[in-house]
Amino acid sequence: MPASDAVDHYAVLGVSESAAATEIRRAYLGLARAHHPDFHEAGDEAARSANEREMQRINQAWTVLGDPTRRRGYDERRRAAQPGTDTRPRPEPARYDFVPYDDEDIDTDYASLIDDAVEGTEVPRWMQLLPVALLLGGIALFIVGVMINLSPLLSLGLIASVLGVLGFLASPAIAISRSRSHESRR
Image (cartoon, rainbow, N blue to C red):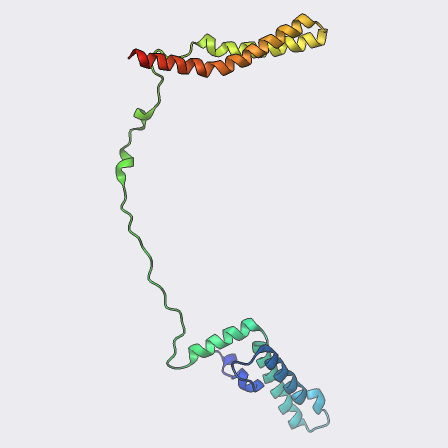
C-alpha cells in the first residue's frame, strides 16, 4: 500500500467499510466540528497542535472516502493488500477459431472473365450516335425556334428531341434482340 493508504480511513472517521456515503459525511462533519482548530483557540498550544494533526487526518480520510471513485480505488487496494486474497481478475485465454485458408482464388485468371460481346450482336456505330445527334439537334432547333419565334422550327426541334429519347430507349432493346437472334442461329 502507498503511504497515504497506510492509514485506515474508515477507522479515522469511525465508520464501517460498508457505510453509506451519507453516514460517512455525517461522521466527517461531526469530527470536523469536534477537532477543528478554530474551535480550540483558547486552549494551550499542544492541544491546538494535536487538533490540527487530527483534523489533517480527518480531511485526508474525507478526501478519499467522500469521492466515490477514490473510495472504490481505496477499497480495491485494501482488498489486494490483505494476505491470502487475490482479487485481481484472471485473464481469460485468448479465443482463436481456426479458419482454413482457401487459396483457390489466387489462381483465378481474370482475363478469361472479361465479358466480350458475342460476334454479330454489336449495335452499329450510326445507331449509337443517332439518338445523341437527334436529341442535341432537337434541343438546338427548339432553342433557335423560341428565339426567333418560328413555330415550324419549334415543332421540328420537339420532334427531333422525342425521336432522340426514343432512340436512347430503343438501343438496349435492339442489342438484346440481336443477341437473342444470334443465339438462336447457333
